[in-house]
Image (cartoon, rainbow, N blue to C red):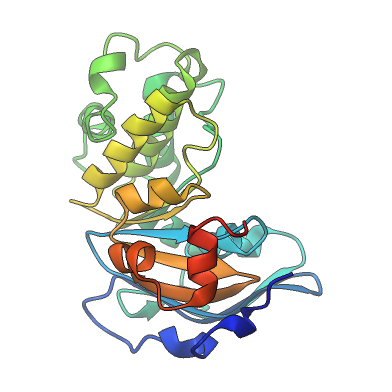
Length: 271
């Protein structure tokens, strides 16, 4: 087994200073499932209107880290976390903060498409708004249409809005789930390997959508596909054994990584 001792710099080299121009910041994040520590002093910054990719071998803590960004980690029995996650400079784990509101501001798209099976395409998009309460004066019809347009799905389903959300293809279902997240007007969108269950054509559509979404949101995507990370992201974080090994602009990570362990991973020496 490789050791992160191959690092040429200290693990907390990425410790971020509080910065008003950064959308989200992870500061010294440690996470456990029961007695097993999954994340070890991870620090990361997410800038607005960018795509940040998180790469690394299976079991390195990528998905756990992502779920810390909208307080989903705490929903797992016997899970705990220490450190801070800042959203616009405010710690989302502060006891005064409502986690439901955090999950509205920080949307999540999961690995496998998960439209609500008993709901229509329309109701799938509107579901979150109905649960959290649409703002006064908002038109559900307008929000649903706009969300589907942003997810590049409107033209494909506009005549079938009453059909079940599960009646469309897997790639369309994943874009429906993205539209559902967009409908809540989040500020950040988290994506946990959103293309792993999709064919190449559907994957290409999701990748194109990811690059378009950064015009309005900060996007953080976990992916096992290094080519995908190089195509869609502005910044890339490489994780190994629960630690953040290297974080930099994507071009730097893939063309001239500073860490030997990063170089070995992206050149396929292990994974």
